[in-house]
Length: 219
Image (cartoon, rainbow, N blue to C red; front, side, top):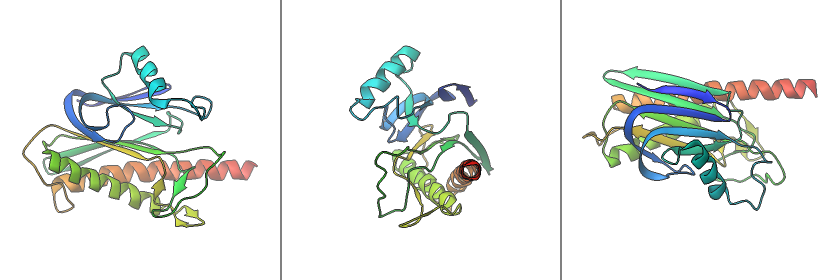
């Protein structure tokens, strides 16, 4: 049973068992085995320009006895996370996302964010269906596509066009080892991943946008 626990500045998604995880997270990137995924809220004061981020995070994880966890860093307020669970046939996908767009980008372009606050989108998806490593890679492509669609539907306009994500997004896919090599949009697995990620990111982006509108109104 998956449990999601908030203990500021940490958010934890515990799978209740060891799963294979694919991500480009700061801690345990690539293909890994883990029982949980963590988010650690950070701000500019936590991470000055010359700091070794991996060394700092290692100390933080050691203090929490959590070196085993795949771990994201997020500048989004950790309390503002979203969850979505999608059931399709025999497949269940559970997505948890923190969504901030303060360093949004459009694919194929870059905006100068020097001396500005940073945001990010961090998404973890847990599946009940067993996948091969090839299946995990295709599942990742579906999660990233769902993220992109949700952001584009905001829409959040930049000088370079409509935003498609941020420059610091990270995604993790967790699933048991199993025989399924396919997780595309014609499959139950792909449909469930896409729906869960889309719904979680869309809600998170809408909430972030509402916060920015309120800040600008008060300014």
